[in-house]
Image 1 (cartoon, helix red, strand yellow):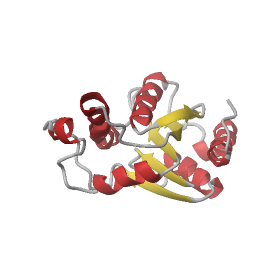
Image 2 (tube, helix red, strand yellow):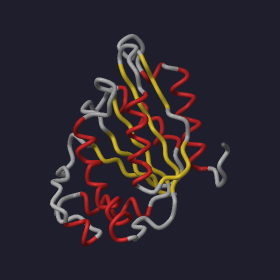
Image 3 (cartoon, one colour):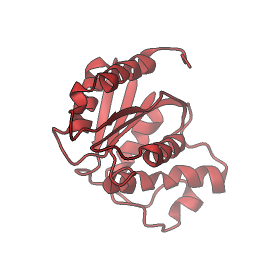
Image 4 (spheres, helix red, strand yellow):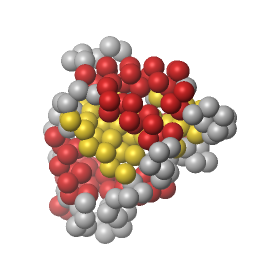
Length: 187
């Protein structure tokens, strides 16, 4: 089993990282984490190359990510929520999924192959809304070929209680790992 984790947090030891660490400790198989703030992945420049070729013209670390997406079984988008949305660098990395969209829309080609399971991890201080970020994450997961989703793992009010101490979030992370490991869809 292979799992791709797209991490939208700038903090190496923050709340998002704590939940990702807990997830990886409970995952079977291998995993790869793409840290949006540290990656060598440029945002989409809307050059139009993918509309005709089904691939991206930019030559950076995204090439390896495309291949891992095709090979993996599970995909997670994990991010702090800033002003009700995923972080900017994560959205920039994910803008490169335009190549998948264009393969389907303009070339009538399914670029992924097999369907995958997806999960969303969202954290944030305060009592703001996670709805927009969750919707965006699900759209992006769909572009990467996920068709079965675990309910979002949310840790709110991390300015008061760290995500690692949020019992509900911790329990949900264990549930997400179990969901990825199971051969069937429990929902």
